Every structure is written in structure tokens, then in C-alpha cells.
Image (cartoon, rainbow, N blue to C red):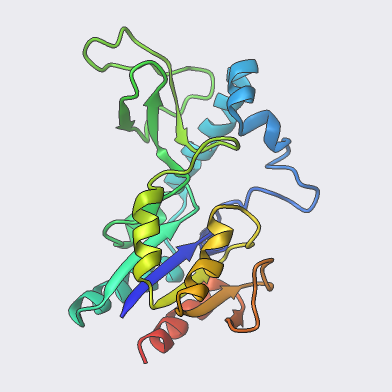
Length: 235
């Protein structure tokens, strides 16, 4: 058995992490194009920096919930039984790792990391969260290039797509949790594994855009539903 799990904002919602886009299409009061594109960073880096510094600072006051913990426990059970397991997340928080997941694939990057625009060096930094103070690179020979959040903005290519493609190619059991099914390329993963014959589960508050009649859809909050649903995957 080769299990692939894709998580979205619904997994972290019960930890108090904002799901970002509201009913009006705004991201915490901002248009996405004003705070989450390379063009926005070039036009108004101070605004984008403040926006992401607030989100980075919020990591210190949230904790993994039952859904994160259940996924970490499932990974350990799968390994003990000789099953393959890949966790792919669209989330940029670090709650999967803090819950004990060994190697989540952050396809949209991580708030806990900063990346130098000049030399490309990446460093983990959860303490430099002053919204009014930019951080510069300290890599040897760089010359103090500016650091930006190491997250994937609209118009940028998600990370680790080759690894994801290999996991999807081998997948026999696929579970999407807390995703809208509207953001590509992640929204296309379900269709891909269906074509390859994988069994598919979807867990979310509401049916996602990419739901198919062949999927087993389980409505509800991830923190309440996921522990039992993961047991079903093992049967």
C-alpha cells in the first residue's frame, strides 16, 4: 500500500490558523495580488513584509491539533506495517512537523523559512518577526541580499513537483484533507491518481470543486473526523 495525503487550510483551522481567503476573496483584508505575488513584492515590499511577518509571528501562538497528530501517528503505523507514506501540504505553517510528521512536502513553501533573493540561500528563522525591519542574508560572499518569505506566491512554481509526481505515480490510497479543490496544480492530484486506479477519500467541511462520484467524501472538521478516517484507510 502506498498512501499519499494532501492537506490544505482545513487541517490547521482548528489550531487557529487563518484560512486566509474570506467569502469576499480577501486574504486577511488584502487582495491576493497585493500581498502574494512577485509583482506585489517588487511594488510594495514593506506591505508584503508586514503581512507575512504577522503570519510568521502567529506561528508561536498556535499548536498542532488532533488532525496533525493523527497524521503523524498514521505515518508511524504505516511504516511499521511496511506501507509507503507521503504527506504533501499546501499549508505554509509548521504544524505537521511539530506534530511529529517526519518529512512533509511543503509544496507552497514555509513561513518558518526566509530566502535570499540575491544568492538563493534559505534559512530557518522564527524569531526575526519585526514587521518594520527587513532581514538581510548572512551567507558568505552574498553581500547582504534581502530576505523574503520562502513561500510560493501566485505566478511562481510550487516546490518539489518531481517528488510529488513520483509519489502520485505509485499511489494506491489517496486522501485529500481540508482542501478546496480549486488551487492548481494540487487540485489536479485527485484526477491523476484516479486515472491510475487509486482509491480516493476526501475529508472537508464542504464538497470540494474536484469531487468525483468515485471518491469517498467525509464531511466535518478535520480534527474531529480524521483520526477515525485514517483507521478506515488501513482496513
